[in-house]
Image (cartoon, rainbow, N blue to C red):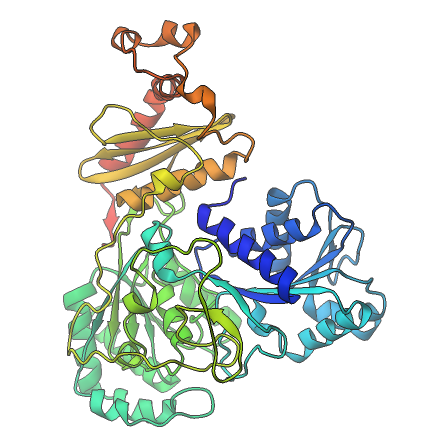
Length: 561
């Protein structure tokens, strides 16, 4: 498979920092391809030597997921598993479960390592992780330590400085939105008569005092105002609501139900079976709203969710981004047929957006990309080296002052999605089939993909050797381009990518001309690659039409945006 351009930069910066400093942390949110980048860094550090690596994870599903993706990114490197069922160090890269490896007997039998990789690295200072890290460095003080996380700021306020001295790179939400890998948020900050009181709430050890927040927000008059605004701005959308306390969440859930909106409640006091049942109702067709308390902040995604309601403030910007991130996933049309999602509405009834600045400002949406080494600055609290655009130190939690916007109600991050030229960044050359920018196509040796405009929407379609044509995305042009390019990246390799190969510009072959319509044969500017793209479209035209027309004619389309 082929890495995206931004993923390649993330990998290069991580590898450079490891060689220079011996350890580093990479920060990448949902949608960035964190596991793919982690695997690529590991592969580069193990290349051209006999080094041995261990990749840590804290859940079974992460261990198996990381191992499977690693094999796709680094097919030439052997792997092994160390968990409760299997304990092998035979592979060049061993994928280990932290609870299992942290036991004394297992640490005693652990071989000397050259690279320790920590997935979900915000856990790195926990006791079980530190036991592993300390033992690894005892065995080999020159072992590289690499961490990747989407959420570097821990809820307990502890910094990651004891393990990592620097941040190699941070992929911003705004970057992923502009490349079509996440949908844009449209944020509204709404005062229902509680802002002044909320601004005076004191912080506890970890966050704002949620009992005080409850006294302010957990009132029927406030909740009625919340539901009124929600119905006006997002009443048809699948919605996740974040509350301050269980009692607050229960009352909000009941208020939605009283307003004839099917809502379910999820909180930490429920059994696993009860939580799964509630989420099943939301993720099915039964419930439109899920109300929760600190349960769905991370580790949960339901792609059709296109509205996030914040009924609590957050002292950490990372928590705010986590909550908003629950609604930014693009939709896989194969998994959710008929669902179209072009943005996410965020209704902030607390003060988080005012405290931390808008997501637009935080996400670095000016469109600039760093060339070479990323600009950095030094944290005045812990002296860590971090990217210049970061406003909250991922290692110790120091916060640079954010500009406060006092508008009562405005689309603070309701930016217009500006398209980054994916066509130029792509590893493949894209052809405008008919010269009207309504049908673009690219192909490799193993796969092809295209985007097609019909009835006011773009449709991304992909096919490959041995695979039938499938709908990859439907909606905005930039999202469809991203899905199409990712399809090619998943099915091709660096060897089969040929955007700049000389033969692309050569005249068509006689065999190509034989199968092309007459008007193409007389086009003296036609290149071999253009001819290849036209033929790919011609041979797959019926399948492409079936996929696009079926999506366009679907009478059961449930537009969520």
